[in-house]
Image (cartoon, rainbow over all chains, first blue to last red; front, top):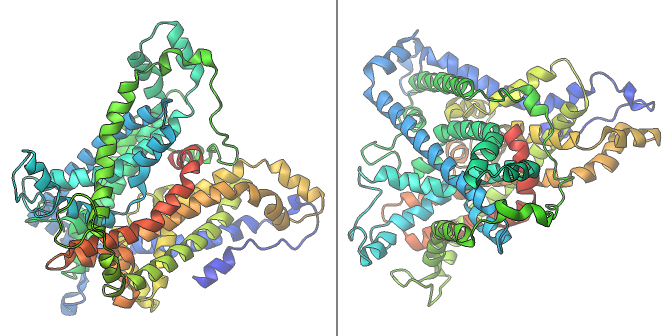
Length: 311
Length: 298
């Protein structure tokens, strides 16, 4: 890594002449460190995942290692109910999380985009959970959900719920408990991005709409929303990919439990490779996850006509 | 989304002026939102946002076993305990090291690449941009096994270097796109003028461009720091030695203990939050105008 940092310094071109005579290789030298790092630590691992997916590969059972063809994939699709369960849960998790985050994020952005007293402070407070890590979010919500000392006890005091409820260990409530915890951290992401995009809506449009007597709801529907569309499409997509892939929160908050009901596909993959050392099978699952992500992303961009008509 | 989209310059913080005062006349109906429609939902949301923060602060400051809703009598026992007995002092050092080195590497490498993308046309530029965008879809979590093998090969398991490299690599694409957008917002003619005055490209860049990039670099650097400070999985996988662990892993250990020491967990959480909160307060100014706009277009 020390080398990479050293290479990163743009080399001084040897010539003293006008800089338009810069050597042709300069741009390549400049992107070289980034390109090498990405080749070595993103591209190569991706390729090796594809390779392992066709292998039986388990360091703890070396005698069985070898070429497996599509056995791993066949096993996943035909003989592994956990794969389907975790896939369905992942879809549910991503759909609910991204949908609710977008809804609340949009509402919040519209609110803090207004002019009102205390706006700067309001914004800072609303956005503050944005920078909190998944693990820290878990830590905080573990405290809140604790049946002895958490908020449920005080809610029970005022008649909501009952004493001794532990939302994280009940298969019925754990999903929404995790959703709320992740919303707490995820909503500011959307609020920030949408607020940023709101800054570029031309004020003249609203003025014109007003002259025409359009109500605020109509203005939102016909001016604000179309303007935000591309930002919304892209941020929901990035967020969906991120929510699908990110295991920090669920890993630490529920550990995929109770009884596996909050295990997403990536969490299942991590368990398969880390605990069971079944690298070949985990790689096959990873490949499937890649393909699903890619497919869904393309379909989503197509359906939403991203960057479409008005560009 | 396309390369075209990404190359379109985001409004750089360089130029982002504080919102211009709006002419009075325009303020009519759009701004005539009844106050309660702002304050009511905002307050409700703030309760939801702030109670968790208050809760962890409360637990970290009140004595074990207390059920008081205010942290009084106040005690710092939990902090002492977590810092020394639970090695959060060591974790903190490790996390700072990882965060700072990741910040420096990401910024330097992304600055070089971003400059190339902003100022040159070269053969593989399109392909390179596409690779940057695609890498956004590659989940670090799913590459754990091959990454582990690479670092094992490099004899870097149990060294902070592995985590630093992994964090840097996954920060790079977005940082580079952002920085190239920031650089595009600095007029090329400024640089050319400096060349005419006898500077070479490097000097011109240092004297003319770099100072104008400062807000953008701060945003990108802070983001890299916060990300690597928060990230959990790489450290969990690549560092087995307790001496080398980082704060998120420490927090996870506290949560995983058989009988969770809630006071210690809360104090650990506060320790984890402090640097991030400081950084957040620092970059807030630039967050809306520059950084996130670039991120969306990226």
